[in-house]
Length: 424
Image (cartoon, rainbow, N blue to C red):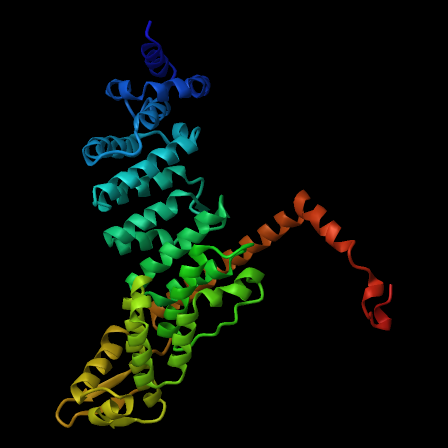
């Protein structure tokens, strides 16, 4: 009997009970090398298997049959097969071979990018990562691939739905770096700058022994988004950042640090001149669009300063003070800040061209606001419980305790000036 036919019979006969599936898994691992050597003969076998029943066997054969690299014609054939498999496969079976499943999903990502149709991979990868997740708190290696496809397909809202999950479990540091970096870019695309700042901050402050390219690119965007969101930037990173990041990150991002310094002067002409001089550098980093938003934010920041000084002001005076070209341009900025961004509260009298600045109308007593505050409190309480549980878990970890014990031996009370009442 042909070995492939024998294997097909075993897959069909050992895909019902848990014990049968475990036995099949052992057989498939032993047959893995022979499957790869027969890769050109595997495609017809897939038609004889049901991906919802024979998920584990289907996965092994599918992974072995996917050539690399592929042509566009091959990709057009394979992508629908992989998409159908991901949607139909058994979660319990594919979790027995997570590396195989990851390999298939990443090949799908590569093939939809080859076809220049990243949107075809968005839904399948979302389904795949949910099937791979033990819980929504678990960050899988597929998260970053999914977010990358969302970016390329401009499916920002789909990507945002994943970013709302709180992540506490990470398998590999690189997964976290890419997840936060791509997630920050998606939030920038949706102009959710505070969320973008939080994600990019996680990248630049994450533990690292040496500077990596992801952290450098994240730091560039972190500077720009800080200026857009807060109108300022500090090169000082928090104490919990790695020493490598604190020492070296700004050296790799000097044009962006200088841009922040120019922004800090409040002089729009100087900022525009600096951007013009370094436009080629910003464009090569794919950050020129974000830099232009930084320039635009300075106009808004200067208008916000006026609200702290004046109750009423003409559009002409705003244009002159903020260095805009005309009252019409000043009106456009004020309307955008009031209607679209909600950054100021004001009314414009079209007849005499006067702007009246108002106080924040929010009284913090509506049902919606109370619900929002309550949900925020509940979330913080849940986070506190989670941190307490993690702290207790780490305190009992043998590796941590042995390292802490070694560190403690390096110090002695005689090395410190202990007050008399605390003498031991």
